Image 1: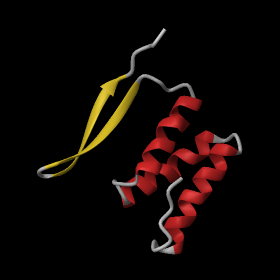
Image 2: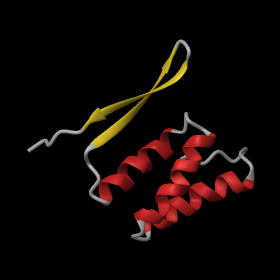
Image 3: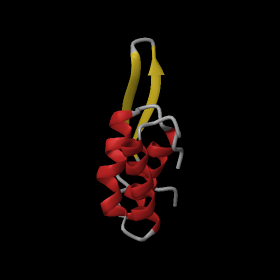
Image 4: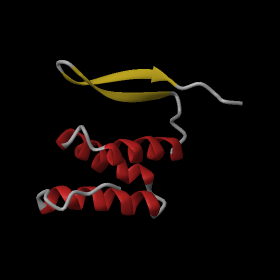
Length: 85
């Protein structure tokens, strides 16, 4: 997880708690904290990655969101996941 030490303590704590829930075997409890971290900092790649991994751990593999920086700011694109097998 990518935690910037210049962030306010509450913001850092959300990501640390999300990480602990996920790696402690409770990915469903990490989701709201990860979403909150992304709302606060949409460019946090680590938070986006943890969100994808948490959804995967819960078996929610039907869609993925891709974040890109466009000329008008950040753009979220939704795509369907396909089975590799």
